[in-house]
Length: 135
Image 1 (spheres, rainbow, N blue to C red):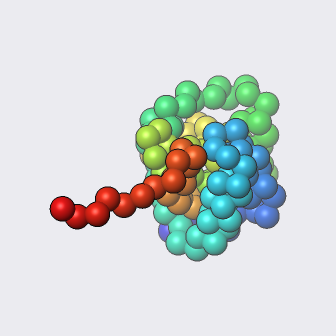
Image 2: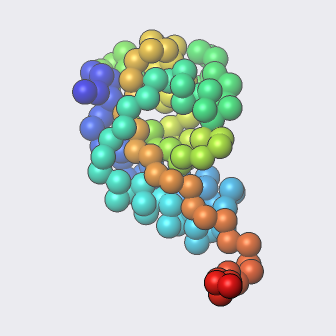
């Protein structure tokens, strides 16, 4: 069950933002594929803000960070936040929603955050994979 300050579904603009960020980490075609997988993922997972930040190796942004402050103001005004988009791996990638995670942490570090999470794309080394014949 999601908390009272979270929407059930990510907003449409979250996916292009995720794709843009992911294209810094992987080939643009893999970023596109991963963003599509996030959009197609209907099963919501829930994780604590402190666990997401730890898995991603990201610092907690302060209360006075402009985007964190904006998200906290939205919650105070009764506007629900969009679930975050994650890509599983080591480290975890926060494809979209870093500021929302930090805002939620400042409200309650143990609160469950609704997420969409997919596996990391396979890295294309450019080499053709061949299967060895059994001996």
